[in-house]
Image (cartoon, rainbow, N blue to C red; front, side, top):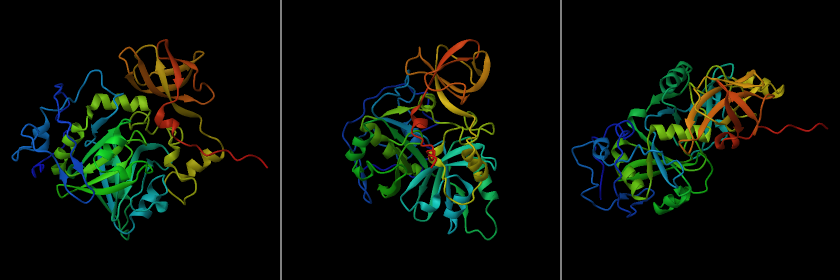
Length: 394
């Protein structure tokens, strides 16, 4: 049985980004048992050295930056350990998060999860959090840019009588994300098929060489796929097991490309003080029925009076364009480009941008920047969102 060294510190994410070597990995499938041990076939080539961290021992082996990034591969693995993990514990944790974010935490039970949005009092967007409800805590996965500010903000709203503790556990944990149509089969290969087909956010605890591993349904940018939360000492064994199943690792550039093409809003780009949560299209993260929470008054008013004036779209472009470029129709500014990437082919160009509702919709042509033509399209992440249906008049 192979075990990761106890001195393993930070995960692979920031150390392997420039490796381009393609090495052959064993196709033997290690088994991962719930509440049991993680067994791996012994191999001198893949064995973690006892005196090295998991990051150092894997660094030479990872094909982490492929060009072009293989975003259409049937099984992808991403090290998202640079994303923030915030643990909220204490008897009042559910009510506290219920009041501080947009989702209905009081309707969730242990083992369930959801997306929720941190907003300002006027419903301007700060970040989307992927939340797991556990027996004694709620774990929030947030963007790297917002980790410190959100931790500080939550602590600010914990009052003396509140039984709530906020802990940043980013450095004590690692986070991997799985994507692609083969993900379900791989989960079955690893004896984790009990999670296949479960609702988004469902999470369960397992054991890897006696160390805890939490697996959840969803991977931040999609309701399909899975997320794995573990200690750094476990990360090396888990990573090698995923590679042995045929996973192709994605580096930061590939991840950003995938994020834009999928249409997941990001802080500092689509999620800023310039746009509100409804303009960002994050309907699945918003409770329409729960009691008072930060930003609720603005959200309710926007819904009641149909006050959402713009929305986020994908845009196929004829050429590269800088984020921040204006979007125009018939010479009039109607929006703003927020993110850009090359498409699935290097000759393709794709972007995200906000456009006024009455100015353009799916299939329409717009002009971006200096006469760059764009076609407005739906994107997967936003098309999965479900706005409330309008009630018909009696």
